[in-house]
Amino acid sequence: MGTDFEIIPFDPHTATDELWTLYFDQTEAAYREYEPEDPLLSRAKKKELTLSSLPNPYRNDYTYLVLAEGGAVPAASASMVVEAPGSPTYASNKHIGNLHGLSVSPKYRRQGLATRLVAHILRDMAIREPQVTELQVPAALETGHKFLERKGGTVSLVHSENRLYLKDADWAMIERWDAEGARRNPGTEILTVTEIPETDLQDYARAYTETINQQPLGGLQMKMEITPDQIRYMEKKSAEQGTVHTTIYTREADGRVGGLTETSYLGDLGHVARQMLTGVRQEYRGRGLGKLLKARMLLHIRREYPGVKYIVTGNADSNAPMMAINTALGFKKHLPVLLYTLKIKPELLK
Image 1 (spheres, rainbow, N blue to C red):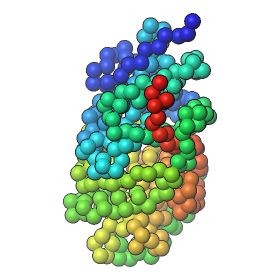
Image 2: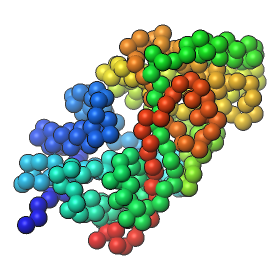
Image 3: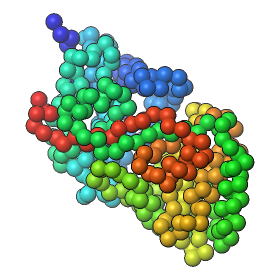
């Protein structure tokens, strides 16, 4: 006789303490499969962050939990993110559902549970988000690759988490990049902020949108945009959650934003800082601004957060210019992730 499974929605705002425990048991075990040694954020802080991030005016989030043994044991979980009508790119991206965190506990694999969970989610999406016609699904484990390929998924982007351990960094080179970049750009002002000044906000949003769309997206068909309102929203949320979101950017002699880099640091996970977008507008390239920005950010982290052991960043493997800078700095590939595109077909709902 097969195991009886119950698929339920996990609503952070209404979940009982018992359901939160089952959710954490499942998601932490899944994380441990590909990150067996990293310290975990405390459950209390993770719950606080989850609750404070929802609802989000720019996205709709749906989480599902699969229970076994009469509801006493978690067996699987997954989350779906869909752009909300308030997103500036809703019209172009509304057909995309981002299915992430899809995991099945080893004990319950090879029983068709992942197929059943995906079908359940897609039937729910057909009611809640009927405009969604395709999925983007990241997979880091071989079991995920095989599952998605069986379902007709195609690899749209090869992406990696890269890490720089600060003890291995060539600080003399980093300081040289910083000094040389400043010398090559005497008319450029370099600002370090946790809140974008109102005078630069509009152009910063344009610069962010330009540079994030310069990244290679492989076979992904999507548009990315950030607005001043989104920037202010993210700044407000970071402050509420205790995350220090630092941006270093250049203000050129003509008054425009030339390039930027950003990082986040959460004191509850003081061993790591996360670097997100680094980009330079096309017309300001060729002056070493990318190296300058990366070096200035690393020096900032070393000075402000002495407990940080490593910095995490993510890059498409095909992003040759940024990969070259990161490799020179000492970043090494830590976790390869394949991003699959999966067209929603009737057979997936069965």
